[in-house]
Image (cartoon, rainbow, N blue to C red; front, side, top):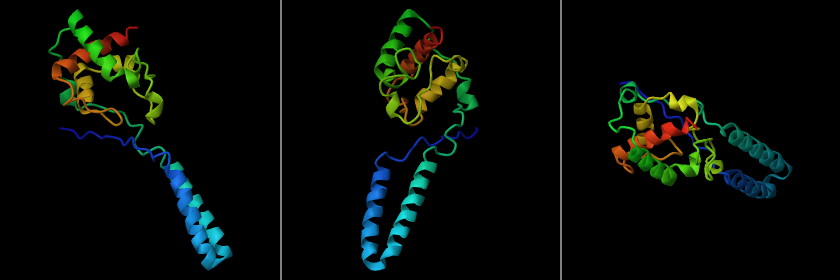
Length: 172
């Protein structure tokens, strides 16, 4: 079985830069009384290097790697036939669990999307439609930050229903 890389989606918290500047100001004040004029240079260099590290770490390494399901999972076939009841059930779950990030039509423009730090998958994209049912089932099951895993939150039938519904988004 092949190993799957899970790229980190973590970014520094927005308040981290403010905290860094406050600590730097405190250190400068403390050193100013002891070191005089060299303290400002030391504080400036510390602040500059710290800020540079924050900016450089904004995009974690590997965050642009493609998220690919293991081959054995990707080959799985859906046991839930596409039907009106399956599509209705999938839509109901999608609207409750997925809309906030992926948007009503699957364009990744949900009301919470801007706060995620990354752009949610555009589920209406033909590339998503080209993924196998098994690959989508695996991705929904395991999740990838900031998307939660739904393996313990949705039954397998519910996850297959969502996939059936997702297939309708690409056709719009």
